[in-house]
Image 1 (cartoon, rainbow, N blue to C red):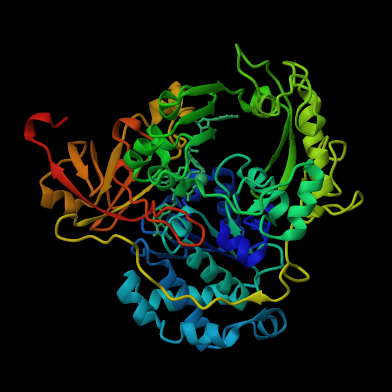
Image 2 (image 1 turned 60 degrees about the horizontal axis):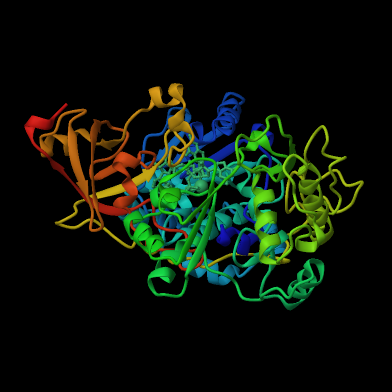
Length: 557
Ligand SMILES: Nc1nc2c(c(=O)[nH]1)N[C@H]1C(S)=C(S)[C@@H](COP(=O)(O)OP(=O)(O)OC[C@H]3O[C@@H](n4cnc5c(=O)[nH]c(N)nc54)[C@H](O)[C@@H]3O)O[C@H]1N2
Ligand SMILES: Nc1nc2c(c(=O)[nH]1)N[C@H]1C(S)=C(S)[C@@H](COP(=O)(O)OP(=O)(O)OC[C@H]3O[C@@H](n4cnc5c(=O)[nH]c(N)nc54)[C@H](O)[C@@H]3O)O[C@H]1N2
Ligand SMILES: [Mo]
C-alpha cells in the first residue's frame, strides 16, 4: 500500500462502505468483491439495483460481471496500460473535470505527455480488451457524477503494483472524483484489522500514524514518548527478509500472525531461508507450517479472547471485547509482547514505559493504555477515547474530542497540498510465458477459505464447501492437453511443482489458469514468483509462467 500512502497519505478507503449506495458509477478492478469482501459486494449489488452503473476489469469472469454494464477482461499484468488508455480517452475527448484539475492537481503536462501514446488501439494490443470497450468504459466513468474506484490485489500484487495504484489515482483526479461521497479511490483492505496494524506503524518506514522513521522531528517525538532512542532507519519489508537471511544479514525473526511458509511467493525459498535463522520465534493461535520449523512457539489468544480495538477498511476504529478466557498457556498478543519486553529489559515487574507486568487475567487496562498513548501521538486519533467508541466506532481523522470523525477524505484538499498526477509508463510482468512454461498463472482466493487455511480448514462447513485445490482452465486448453474435468495434473514453474485437479471453465481465457492459494497439500506458492515491486516490495503473486502436464490415465479421478 506504500503507493497509495505516497499519493494520498495513507492506504485506506477514501470513502465509506455505505457511501457506495450514493454512487452512480463503480469501477471494480482486480477485486473479486462478492467472494473476498461479501458485505461490500452486497452494497455494490444494492447500488446496481438503485441504478448505479457497474464497470468490472478482471481477467476472470467473477460474479460481479453478471451485473456489470461493461466487463474488461484484460490479460493479467496489463492494468497500467488499460488505465492509461482510459485516461487517454477522457483527456482527448475533453471529458475531464477541468476545474478540479486546475484547482486541485499538479504535474498535468508530464501526465498528458505520458498518456499521449496510450490510445485505446495501443492498449487493445497489450490488454486484449477491444478499443471500443475501452472508449465506452472511459465515457461512462467520466459521465458519472459520483464515480468510485474499488481495487484490491488484482491491482497491487504486481511488480508494477505502485504504478497501477498511481494510475488509478490519476483517473480519480482527472474526473474530480476524490473528495465527495459515493466516489473516491478505495482499496478494500484484506485482513481484519490490517488497517489498524498499518495505523499503529506495522510498516518498516513508519512510526504510528504514518509518521516517517526518517523524519527527524518524528524520531525525536517517539524517542521522547517511549523513553528510548528510536532508530531513524527504515526496516526491511517482510518480503525482503528471505533474501536478507540467505545473504547473512538477518539472523533472528519473530513472526506474529503470519504463515509465510505457505503464503510467501516462491515459498520453498522462503522456508529454506527461515531454516537458516539462528532463532525463529512464531506467535500464532495454531501450530502452523511456519510454527513447525520455529525454535520457540508462543501460543496466542484469538480475537474473541482479547480486548482492544480494530480499525476497518473505511478507517472506523471499533471496540473489541473479550468474550472468552484464553485456553491453556495462551496469552493475548499484547501481553506476550509486554512479557518479552520485560525480560529484554531485565525487569520482572515493570516493563516498557512502566507498564506493569501483565499478569494473566488482568491485562484489560493495557490495551486501553496503548490506545490512550496512540491518541497523544497521532492527531488523526487525538479526539478518540474508549468512552467515545463505547457504542459505536469513530472514523479517523478525528482530531479533537468534539469532532464527529471524517468518513470522506480529501473534501477540502490533500495532505500534500495539490494532488500529484503521476506520469506512468506501463511495463509488463517480470515473468511471461514461453515455450517451456506456456501458461499464465494467476492466484487468489475463494469465498469459503481464508489464506493458508489455518482457521477455515478447521471448520467442517467451510471445508465441506471448498475441500481441495484445483486449477481453473479454459476448455480449449484442456482439450489440447487431453485432460478431463477433475483429472489430477501436474503444474510446474521454474520454482516448483504441485499436483491438483483440473476445473474446466470459461471463467478464464485461453492461456490463463487460476489456482487458489489456500491448500497446503498443493501449495501454489511453490510455483509463484517472488519478484517485487521496487517501491512497495509487494510480490508479483498475480502473474507467473507455468506449464500443466497430464500425469497418466491411471491416476485420473
Ligand atoms: N473468502 C476470503 N476473503 C478474503 C480473504 C480470503 O483469503 N478469503 N483474504 C482477505 C485479504 S488479506 C485480501 S488482501 C483480500 C483480497 O481480495 P481480492 O483482491 O478481491 O482477492 P484475490 O482473489 O486475491 O484477487 C482478486 C481478483 O484479481 C483478479 N486478477 C488476477 N490478476 C489480475 C490482474 O492482472 N489485473 C486485475 N485487474 N485483476 C487481476 C482475480 O481474477 C481476482 O478476481 O481478500 C480478503 N478477503
Ligand atoms: N499466491 C498468493 N500468495 C499470497 C496472496 C495471493 O493472492 N496469492 N495474497 C497475499 C496476501 S494479500 C496476504 S494478506 C497473505 C496472507 O498470508 P498469511 O497472513 O501468512 O496467512 P494467514 O493464513 O491469514 O495467516 C495468519 C496467521 O495468523 C494466525 N492468527 C489468527 N488470529 C491471530 C491472533 O489473534 N494472534 C496471532 N498471533 N495469530 C493469529 C492464524 O492462525 C494464521 O496462522 O498472503 C499473501 N500470499
Ligand atoms: Mo491481504
